[in-house]
Length: 358
Image (tube, rainbow, N blue to C red; front, side):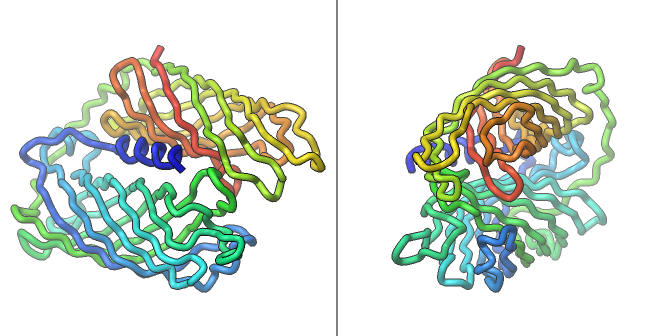
């Protein structure tokens, strides 16, 4: 449990922060949610009829300075949110979620903006799997779990102090296989929001100056190590990952003011404890290649990668996988971060990593 909490704190503290000045406008928000659970695998078909509903309180700063706008032609909001969800199903219970978010908003009309939001945080879930009290909950086995969210919004200014918005959202909760069962909870929602600006919510109109400084920047080469902590028992495969330790190398080339592409390789060793009556793993070593995209958000890089394991003797792990990562630049040389590796519809592990720019 302590490893899970530490990992969540790293993720929350690493969330994007843009340069702020006196032009950042504080605002407060209230959001009402209604939605539907997503049955992403047959083992959680018992949550098909769940219709989650809830609300969210928000504190944010909205950047209105030209320097921030000129990075991506957006007025960026960053802030904190506290949410409550009732999953409308006793076996899932309810959730209280604290999260940090970033939301670039793009001006469509004078009083209308389109936004894209990403959030990460920590969720307290009320009714985890229990062999006696709640044996049919295959979605989560811990009270405390990492939380991720992606959403879009259409925002309307009602006055200089009030604005409202409509949102579509995808929410995900998973513990990264720290403890089984861990199929996770996926749910989609629609939301209605109201925001109050004590100052003024009118956005200045800027014309972006297209500075392609990034074209002259050399590709960044990075190497590092990562560690996966002790995980829960995989009942299906009758095995348990005691730890994993590995190394990675990657090259990243900026292709825009806040965007880059990346490619790399990794190799890591898994230490599994297996039951005596199952097929043995002949080698715990996995080596793979991966490539994808990176959002460059100040000192924080948010990456999405697809990979293929060209060496993999762990028969129950697919060769194709994808990674989602947050890396924080401590300085020009070192980064820290966390990655979620997933195979198909199952999370494989969370790792904690340290990188060095070469």
